[in-house]
View 1 (spheres, helix red, strand yellow):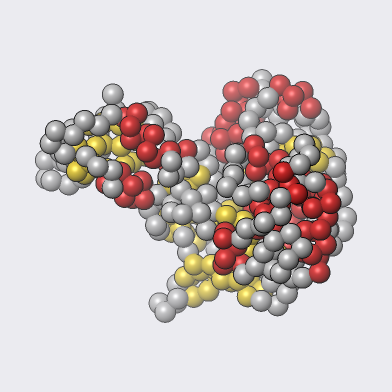
View 2 (cartoon, rainbow, N blue to C red):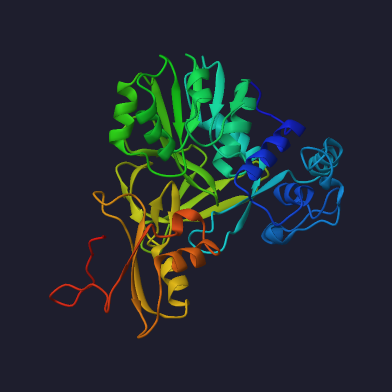
Length: 388
């Protein structure tokens, strides 16, 4: 095991393949990688981290070859990156607003893996379904195998026959909550000795227990964000999350925890405000109790219903609206109640098409209900509604 893993051309190709799979376009692939590596352009000066989302490139070499970004272009980018501060830029999903870039020191991500000890030391291979161009996919699909000295196998973020056939005892299987839920349905029994790793959203304790019942040896659940990567983890269902050793609590004016900070390998300090209400069960242990910004989890993505409402109210013909997470008996997506203007002819298909142009798929309501006024209780308070 080494504590100085380095980024390779193969890693960059894995990032590109992941981005292609999610159809993240708008930039030529050399420019996409330059932005990812916090460079202004292939071989050019380094970009400001806050402007990473605006980086572009006039290099058209990426238009040739099967990959879209030839090895010589990736090599040029990688060499430029290695000569400067080694940082990577990851973007938020955009479901709670416009996607925002966040730069991370590469060495801090390696330090994170070393601190987490995500599985017993006798792992033989990392098997990942996590998109490598997102932060947790990159850390646990690419950095973790290098730190642990393990080979890695990559699969699309879904259950496939190839994935089920390849699983072997000793694998470290890296996924996200929706993947684990689907795995329960698809696999009658898991090979003994597989250890799981889950990130991006809360994993239901019931799902976790069922996975253990199907042969999973254990699982590490990670709590964190794109802004700071991993903050804490837990290794048993029902347990509290424990802060990773390099994070410390930061007290607010009232003496209560207002956020966290850590000293990075470069000597810089990274701070992170509280995004969730936390119930502290010990000095460094906590249980998340809901987002402070009103976001909810949909298909493993943080979605802000108020942000979806803002887009809907801007649609001509929409007088008012309300967006909520479905009740468990209704499903696991968003639902919307629409109050049209008098005479407006709106359909669910029209609204869905408009939202898809501005928001990621999890933020688009699955069901639209139309009425003359927003649902309210007998006392005039906002009320839930049944979907049809």
